[in-house]
Amino acid sequence: MSDDVLIVSGGSPLKGEVRVRGAKNLVSKAMVATVLGESPSRMYDVPRIRDVEIVRGLLELHGVKVTNGDLDGELRFDPSNVERAGIDEINVHAGSSRIPILLCGPLLHRLGHAFIPDLGGCHIGPRPIDYHLEALRRFGAIVDKTPEGLHLSAPDGLHGIKYELDYPSVGATEQILLTAVRAEGVTELSNAAVEPEIIDLICILQKMGAIIKVHTNRVIEIQGVPRLGGFTHRPIPDRIEAASWASAALATRGDITVKGARQADMTTYLNVFRSIGGEFEIDDNPVDGGIRFWHPGGDLRPVALETDVHPGFMTDWQQPLVVALTQANGLSVVHETVYEKRFGYTSALNQMGAHIQVFQDCLGGTPCRFGRMGFRHSAVIAGPAKLHATDLIIPDLRAGFSHLIAALAAEGTSRVHGVDLINRGYEDFEAKLAGLGATVSR
Image (tube, rainbow, N blue to C red; front, side, top):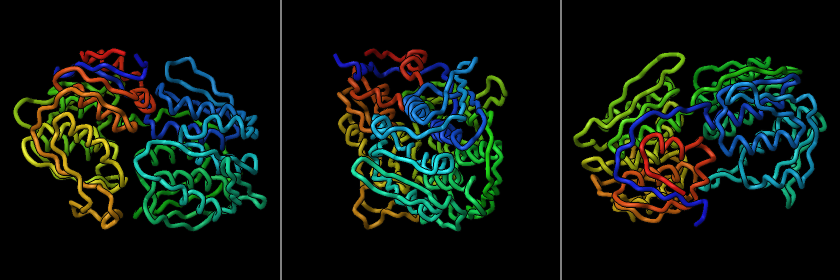
């Protein structure tokens, strides 16, 4: 039997406690930021996930010394000997992550050149890197495309720019922040992303010595400085993982306490969770607090929601929640406005007995880039549906956890293939499932 297959016996409520650590979408970017510094950095609550391993490997290839600290989840970074890595070494990581593109600015500042291999990540849309490359060129970088990847240089250094994003892209905002902090002059970024992970990255850069002002109306102003130091930081908790466990509690009629979850980062999700009929209780204990999520019994209520950039409903919350919505009494409507190909996972749910239809139309009032483009980016979910076990193949990280929730909610035993992909973003998820009373095995 393949080690990448998980046998899941469903039909029982998940009950117990799990703990979330630093946000995947912040930790990997903070690791990249260490390259900008000229003195050591330290980070706590780093999750043991595949994405962290990949970025650690890339940093070590470039001469950053990465060591485990004294505490569980502590990493230390010494960037004093940053150097150019060989193309063959970097290509080992080709296709495994999209993080390498964010190394461009830091490496150009430290070395004057950078090489970026073919980029990977979840297949939920093309996620073009045009924003990144256009911004880097504006800063003064020269980009040469070759069969093996991108070679970048900055013979005249990098200089501040005035730049407006067509869409408040998280990745492009991170790219500009990581490049602008040591560019000569002032950078003004308009229509920037302002997700909690972005604000936490700004906090890290400020600790390093950066001067960054977050204005109203999504405008960020960065005053370049000639050098940066290190940082010590505890990242914000992973709000995606927290919401995934909350949705699992709802879908399985369970009761899960997510230690480390923080209300401030999840207010939009919590509103929807309560609208559906879920209950939650917040414990603000600074040491051992979190949020308890549970299904109170009775029927769940359908909802109409649209994903959007922060402070809207996060696109990564959508897939796990849709599994719970298959159990709501009535028609729910979900309009995806962030990624154009994020409903591919619904076909597997339908095979399990769900009733989900996807449409090209924009079934909602939020302005959407995908209208009339032929993408099936709206879904109508009819419930409640009795889910039954089946064989599932995981297509990407968030869909994978959704498939897992569906298998846990279904009657019978499912075989979930490609389950190791979940390790990219969910730490020790099999041990956590066992602690919640799930019956799972390899």
